[in-house]
Length: 406
Image (tube, rainbow, N blue to C red; front, side, top):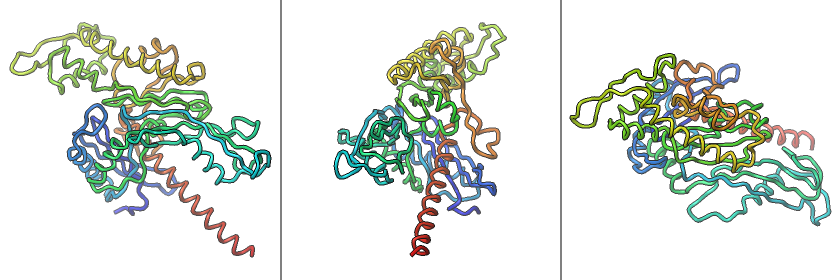
């Protein structure tokens, strides 16, 4: 059995599937996969929990499967949060460093924390909370674009931040469902930030990139430029909408519509569009025969709608002319056929479908857009562990030095 305190666990509660990924650092300090558990999600509607017991049961099944694969018990995890209740907004704050507005002082870590706190001084409705506070740049007197001001000297320190807010009840229901499954939540993470950790390079973030994580119920979007988050949004269209369109258009059950969607996405484009498929009907009605061309007429309008909504959010970000790396699509919904070519023509910039990377021993299952969030959660959790250990180490060294230098 592996030692619990070595394990890093990511837990992705989606409206289609719930995934639990167990990882551990190897002898070279790299994070490697120990076990993966997946269960069908229940109790979700439009990206939010509507039945806590069913959601907790899905979490429990995924966790138990991951525990069996890893040969270790799971007692804590880093958990993703998404859904239409998420909102992003840019804000700024500033403080005087000295006792008077003109006196200069060296910026200390406490000043960094204080100015960030000032930037959070926006008025939130009583049912909302901060999910992420993401610094964009610092300003020290007349100097702009500072990444980290600690140690520099000035009179007034300012900061621009991006704030991600969430519904308290929706976020707490995710935490409660995980707790009911016997797992402690170490931290909640906005899902596309986790996916970005697994799918984006540092160069892409620096040059400017849009990450669109297409889930079952929603598409979570984040815009990066100059290495920081500039804009976040949640679009209320996801892979389930494509499936429902097929179910209604072909009058077939949802499970059959899902099969049709996958078949359309995996079709051989060299074959004619009039290739026929047998489609079961609802109830006792006889099955019917449809062509890929009919499926295209159903799927492409929804694809165009989603891409137009992504383009609108890019416009709201104000970064449409600063996206040198284009658009990266990930999530299970990114596997809908035709999105790549249609995306490039609709958005007018390069588009790629991203598979998660960054872990050792990923096997054949995890390198799939559907697992980007859970892989990213494990990577995020490991980074947090390393940061925590580094702070504790530096704190201990500082205490020892103070004793020696007396």
